[in-house]
Amino acid sequence: MSEAKVIRQVETHCREQGLRLTPTRRRILEMVLEAEGPIKAYDLLDQLRDEQPKAAPPTVYRALEFLLENHFIHRLETLNAFVSCFHPEDQHQGQFLICEKCQAVTEIHDHSIEAMLAKAAADQGFEPARQVLEIYGCCGKCRDQ
Ligand SMILES: [Zn+2]
Ligand SMILES: [Zn+2]
Image 1 (tube, helix red, strand yellow):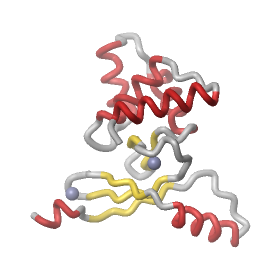
Image 2 (cartoon, rainbow, N blue to C red):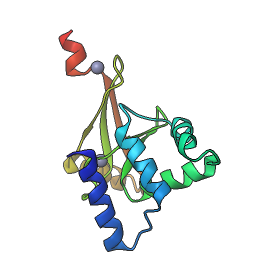
Image 3 (spheres, helix red, strand yellow):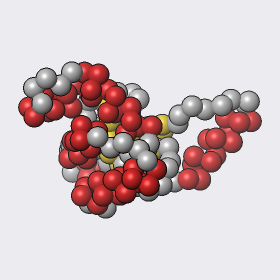
Image 4 (cartoon, rainbow, N blue to C red):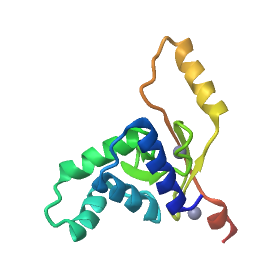
């Protein structure tokens, strides 16, 4: 799915659900989508300040919170960075393959993994708040080199 298409889907979703996609929230989403790889909050703030010199950290954090809550982006916990999600129509947790050589991140979108982990947690009487599965290694491209 292209970036423009993701934005359009997010816009439609927000309209249908009555969510407020403010210009700043939309802009932050665009920046995460346009980033080559995982992007950190302060890099987003830097970029935003090029356009809105008065932008403060809470502006960025609040926008990120909104985008996370609605599953429009994902947070990689270990890297403390954000990645875009190309399946905004489908609420899901993320599973990610992260290349330690080139930092490429690939999202696996597999509901059976989610269901399996949710069941394993439930079996322990545990109620998960969020679930981010990060798998580190070497991507196909790097392995070919
Ligand atoms: Zn996703
Ligand atoms: Zn790689």
